[in-house]
Image 1 (cartoon, helix red, strand yellow):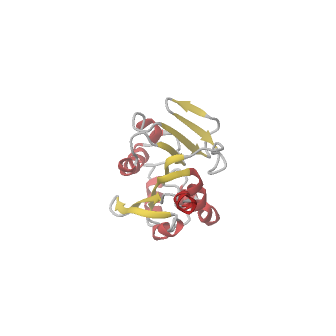
Image 2 (cartoon, one colour):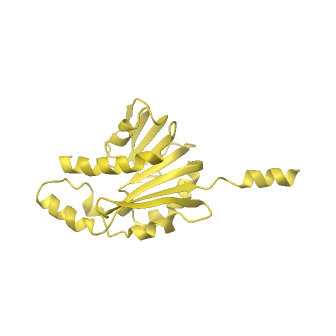
Image 3 (cartoon, helix red, strand yellow):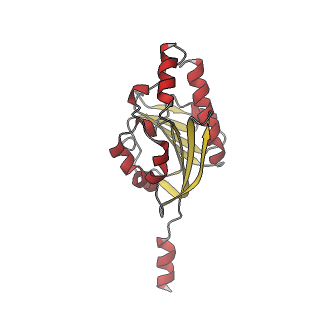
Length: 195
C-alpha cells in the first residue's frame, strides 16, 4: 500500500470513528489488512473483519480477520453494534446490494448502526490517473462500476432503518452515510397484547 492509499484509508476511518461507541462490537466488511480494527482497540469491545483477499484467518488483541465474502464468512449467530462498509458498495454487484438491508438487519442489534463511505463515480477517473503515475495502488479500482452514492439511502429503507447522517468529504468526492436500525417493536407489542 502506497502513502496516498494509506491517506485515503485513514480519512475514511477518521470519518466513521465518531459513529462508533465505546464498547461496540464491530463488523468491518472489506477490512483489507484490518487497520481500522487495530486503531479502534480500546474503543470497541470486539471486532470482526471480513476480506475476500485474505488467504487465512488472522487473530489479534480483540479482533479477528476472516477470509471470505460478506455475509458468507460471518460466524453463525454473530451480532454486532455497528457494521462498517468503507469503500465497499462500489465493488458490490447490485444483486448483493439488494440483499444488504436484510442481511445487515439480521446481524445488527436494535439501535445498531451501519457506517458507509462511498466515492463519487468521478473518482474513478482520478484514481486511474494516480495509478498510471504510480502514486497509488488503487486496490480493486477495476471492480468499480459507477455506483451512484445517491442510491445508498434506498438500500437501507424505513421502517427498518433511519438515516442518521449523510455528509460529503474529500472535496465532495466521497460520501459518508450512517444508518441506524430501528429498535424492534414486536416484543413491546406482544407484551401489550398479553396484558
